Image 1 (cartoon, one colour):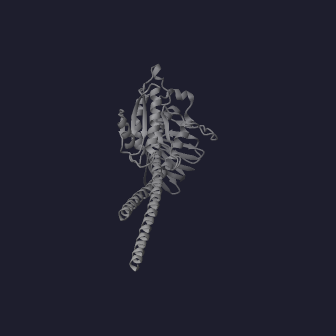
Image 2 (cartoon, helix red, strand yellow):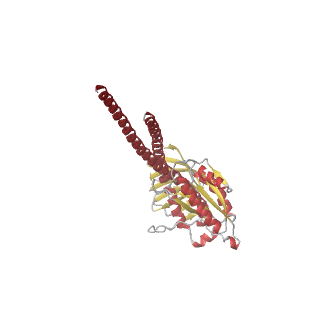
Image 3 (spheres, chains in turn purple, orange):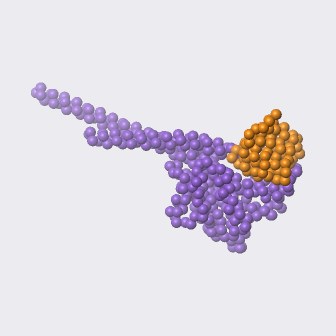
Length: 295
Length: 86
């Protein structure tokens, strides 16, 4: 009996320690989530301003002239055979299915692209994605682990600038980014976004088109703004994934904490019952012994 | 008129102003209230937003300026606030 209860006490202690750790991680994620969420919100005005202006300026005739807007010919008709896929994952685990969901989405896209006859370059951000594709033994074109959970617009620029150049030169057929869309801390579905060719933002209804004085012309303004738009989409992917990571980790750690609490309760009940049983048995033995002495 | 200065990371300035002087791609451009709808590319330089008696200054690089319906939007890839000058 004494041995069994010591083992139980050991387990209770270990469950309680684990619970402390997961609880702390939950609190840390909650505060990091708050800040990351603020960054997502802060990034919105820029994205919407850019999208609005581009939607205002783009006309079908102009679209024909910009390589970034043009759909390249498929490989069967002599178009470029290479496509690029960016995958944003986190550097750290313990976030439930967060990274594996992203990887699954990326593999789905990868298969689609390969089935369409493209040779896909992988550009991976975050340790988890890199680890997985290394394990698969796939060639990785670029990998970054230094971005962490405070991505900046400069990071996005570094990532996508080379791809824009390649695309403009006609060596790339498309650029996709797989990231976690941050709908809310509880809803972060993995999402694939086509970055290049640029899918021109659709004009919001209601706002009347103003007759702008444009300096320089619409085409030159577009030439400047399209790369900004592409960079911004990648930046949004980075920021939203960072926020989504913390949301996912918070949820995972919360359920881990709850589970640990439940297990602890169960162990405590078992332990108390055993203790009570031992005491009852001892009393019975004493009473029995005394009764035997009295004869 | 309402003026907003926006960088990719955040909206840096948002408020009413009396005048904006911005570094366009080919030289300075000044915007006063009730400007005609206007859009131009920005170069590198100092953006000055005068509101009341104070002038807010920002170092900007790239992006565009849009003035429409008495609202000026300065959207730049890099924006850095500079110390205020009166």
